[in-house]
Image (cartoon, rainbow, N blue to C red; front, top):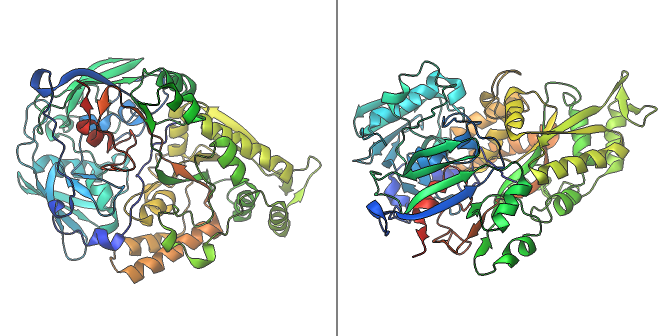
Length: 565
């Protein structure tokens, strides 16, 4: 199953990130990939790289980089077409690479950041990419909330000249440097300014700065061809294919049969079903990347009652989810703080360490529900005021591990007095329902970034949410706690380690006691690859970039790969 993160796995140091108000080159430990070596025309070879990271069928011709449900974002092709200002290697502390921008500086209070652009970058139609395009991109996000996927409080963006752009914010944004520079794809002003409704524009013939352009599209898949005039030189791989599959099962069959070169799937018994078929070439690397949660819609019953949320958390058998649903790839969570472990083990408040039960706690469930005034009715279901505690868990049936986990939770909770059903949907409907708040509960991967801030911001920041029926870019459960909002705001405004610890404690305890999301497991980053046709993959020993076939780092990996001669 594909796990598409809103923000990727975190690495250490908000204070360190704030201190990075220097230049990108000062912290880059690796140069940009050389993309001109090869045997084909313009440095590219004739090999085709096949990538699959989401079982989706049919494909819809939509390459809008701002829209989560566009096919480009769904299958993670966006970063081959459009690019960010910096490329972040979140597998190493404080590591990023200059990209469209060569350097950046913060102002004194973190409310403005200025980027110096790389010279000579061109759009795929031959027009120059300048600081004016960057300013326009952030202005577009400022004017259209639906395009501002990370909820950045943008107050302005101006280009002093073709190489200098300054973006201003309503509050300090030290903690959002990754979102600003690594999660925002820059678009051409001369194309996008002609669109009257950019949030709904399908961008069917994308013009970007990336190493590839759209070649062929059908409902069964699409191919990208090497951009011969790419500003870093034509990529070594001449063609990248994104095929369509109806389910995780059919995608994994193609992976096991050698039809896919790189995948981001959940694969049962991977050593037997995948590696054993070609031990010399079939490889995988699953780094810990996120905290998996059960998102609860707190705007309606039963989850508008915090006691029900607490009881459901106590009822879940995390060990069973880990062993059966995820076949031991993802360990059960141990802290109700939700912090990714062991990544942030040193930042978990002492009273929230190892406070989650690995199995169902029937006694605790009964204690919580009884004290809250609930009693079991004739059907054995908790009820109050004649209304039973019932809800549906919605997840894509094609995401086989999540669907299995949802089924397990429904089975675990029924004998403990909860009426739980499972609603299997398509990935597109799932995303749309989460965005609109049209769901009861959903298992979902967690966000991540340079610090725990990104985890909590994605889960709990009401500024990224929206009223039910409108599009949210985060906080899908519509949790709104003023104390948490103030803590997140204060956290974002400081680079003082003591202040960070204080604000983290406030948010972590709200996560633990209010239970806006039920913490389940520490999620693996799915990444299977075949070395027969291509070499240069990131590995545990050479983790030059996050290895998953996901935006935005997929581009960096592709540019590092070399086709076999």
